[in-house]
Amino acid sequence: MSARESLEVELKFDVDAGQPAPDLSGLAPGGAGAPTVYELNATYLDTAGHDLAARRITLRRRTGGTDAGWHLKRPTTHSDARHELAIDFTDAPADGGVPAPIRDAILAIVRDQPLIPVAEIITERTVTLVHGADGSVLAEFAEDRVLAHAHQSQRTQEWAEWEFELVDGDAELLPAARKLLRAAGARKAASVSKLARAIGSEPHTHKPTRLRKKPTALDLMVHSLATHRDSLVAWDPLVRENAFDAVHQMRVTARKLRSILTSFPQILDPASIAGLSDELRELGEVLGEARDREVQLEINRELLAQESDVPADLRTALIDDEIASQERALRTLRYALSTPRYLSLLNTLDRVITDPVPGPDADRAAAKVAVAGIEHARKRLRKAEKWLTALEPWSAEWVEQVHRIRKRAKAVRYTADAAKPLDLKTATKTAKQAARIQTHLGHFQDTVVNREQLTRVSAEPGLSARAIFVLGRLDAREETRGRAAVQAYLDEN
Image (tube, rainbow, N blue to C red; front, side, top):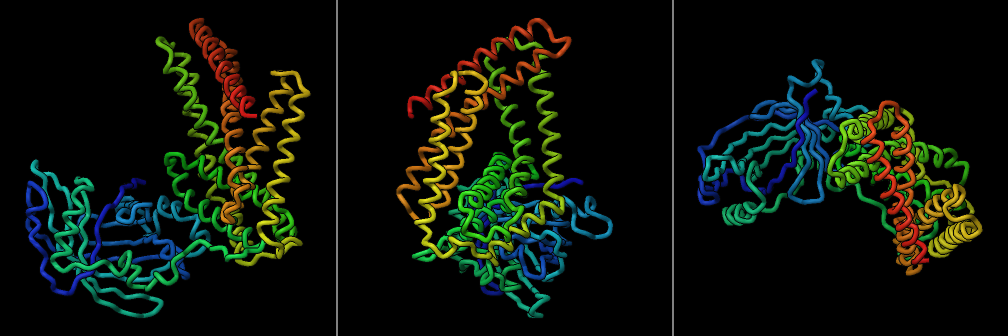
């Protein structure tokens, strides 16, 4: 199924009905074309509780205009931009159902809830194209007369609005367009989208929890879990499309959730979260496989980039085969994110956040519990570091202990990060110290894993003599890099 992804960058304004549009010809060297009128008929879908609209996400099935089909729009970090996923009707299911790529992108939010029509919106749109000197379309200006009917409230509304959307133009065009349209009577849009205005979703917009001035340990726990749950859900669609750094960030989020539960075991009733930590660990492992393949491929490319004459069989073993492994890991990950088990994990997190069962430490001051949790994690780290001094440097046991220190430093960091909303100096300082240890020993662990792979590749039958020679050189470089990383850790400790 063919899907088009794009970044929609536009200005949106409210105007009085019948407000004449300004002359756009001065905005760009190629002037403005003749207006074209379209009638657009859109059905917007959401859950009964408007879970998509609450996150400023819109899903519609629209006919008319030049882009009829299914459209999913999600917010970005820029106020004037939205991520759009579009699928033509010719590529959509014949039964009229929501296309799979779109359903996958919102599965972590919708889960097993049905998507139902929540609004019908008819738009009479007058489009004027703004051209560059070469005739290219830089932007599209739309004058919209809107008639909207919300199913739940049975309310019908009419209004007018203007939209100025970039096509092939760059953002430098926006300030001039904003100034011109404002001068012509345009006002700041009252809603982020036509659907939001139709159903009145703004009062119910999904927002992260906030801590009160003197939070209890339970307050901190719920706040932390909610923050990372929202992050997990936000990274989900990006992981499915293998966006840059998405797998890594979702893996970190899953680990932080698990760390919060294990670092503060008495805040929530143990029976109420039984199995949750294990499920988060399993999620982290399937994310980890895809992430490890991603890292391995990146390291292999960097190593071979430093070689002037790489034999074809070695490039196949270190690059082509690794790409195939990464693709398999991503397929497995996408499958895992579509299983009832994963959706059940999200539902459990929701339940724990909205209806937490207090444990013995629930009513204690958050700061006291956080400091105790951080100190406990630091003691475990110091104990692991002490054991390292009793082992033979660079022996197998010593290398394994270094790996254990890295994992315990990570636990310290995540525990301290959970206390950051409390603005505790000790938490900030401890998190930075642990992050440095994690970084140095993480680089070392990468070399350990990579050298093991180089050894496996060198044992493959039929490998050319030149490939084996280059592998030896790569291994030597990785050994040097690993020792430098460990030395950097030891110098700081």
